[in-house]
Image (cartoon, rainbow, N blue to C red; front, side, top):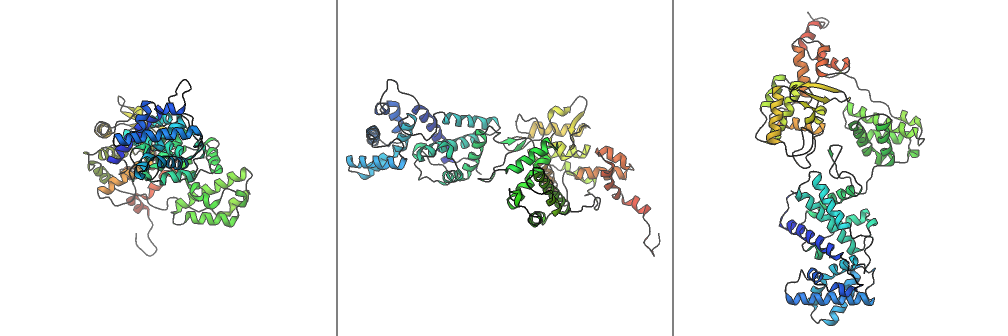
Length: 535
């Protein structure tokens, strides 16, 4: 796994710490107008330059190389804007003229990257817009990762990559404002042949080429003053390199939130759908035609269920109306898409017996954190008929232990009071005491891996589904199965549909009508005989 560092990674982390100390030392000014050559000969700097020397002879050779570098720089032979390659060739020629051993002259060149960095930090060479404080800012990035519930190992790993990036940019002449996708790809792909490894003291593991993109993405979010790991309670996922949300999609999301008043989950779902369709649809709405829109919609809905097809069509139609309101296309284009009819109550609700679902709660493996969490979630679902979305928003501050009740926020942002049964209280207590990771996140149900943030409603449904499958259930459904089972149980006990609607907290009576088909015995009593058959 990428999160498990090997010995090479450990040395790489230590090398990054040494580099941080070295660069901080390089920034120390020398008073009295000391020339660069004098500053270079300070004992503490010579110790940094000769760190990789294997013996006294090599250390002496490194010192002579450092002095040769200072002389060439002071004489103007090395230009302040020279690249590392040009500096290496110039110093190599000078060293070869004084040293008859090619291997020795080659080994001396190992300290040139450090010499160039020292010259940049002392102002003797061009630093390509990188400042003295950049390494300090990188350390703040490390501290922010820790504050967002990342482990010291992960924070150290990502921070090491950023220190590596700063050195690589300085040595390769990449300006701070020119970290374009092609430059980032070059950094991600470069290998141990890069001279910055002479500064890091150890090359990183092969996994670094997989880790670097994520570290750079998090670094950019840090510089933009955005949450690095999680936002709105969800883990931030890395976008494809070079892809940004189109202006019109971002404006549409703003419109849905501030003008339409939709909740964030609904907006997130609509934007996600548009992001998948936008590359084919195109940003320039003036080029849209009816045929083009129909082709995009046809490709988007192929293979989807009728309900999902209807949702996609509604989202795209709403987006087209928004672009028409802004005067970017004709409003008639909305009519290019025919609505997908979806007939309600055409299927029976997914059903499993209430007793069977209760038995699955007892089958949870309480020796593991996953089993304790699943047991607590499934107990709440079975005792109250709560939705997965309501479990995802449940916080410890919502639980009133003395009054034996807890508050939930329904999908239409209505607050409901639910009973805190003994089974629920015991399950939550066991999960909190024996299974829940230590975290400051206020949500009751959180991830078992870092970052320890609250679960989304989809993650809760997935956890329940996986637990049911583990115990042998092969039917459809997940968390919502418990609501259907409760409704069927109440119906078999003689409860009316309005009573079931109140128990499940349905806002509209029509929502409960689907359970009218679930009572086979009562339907059989009112069913008319088929023509030609006896009653």
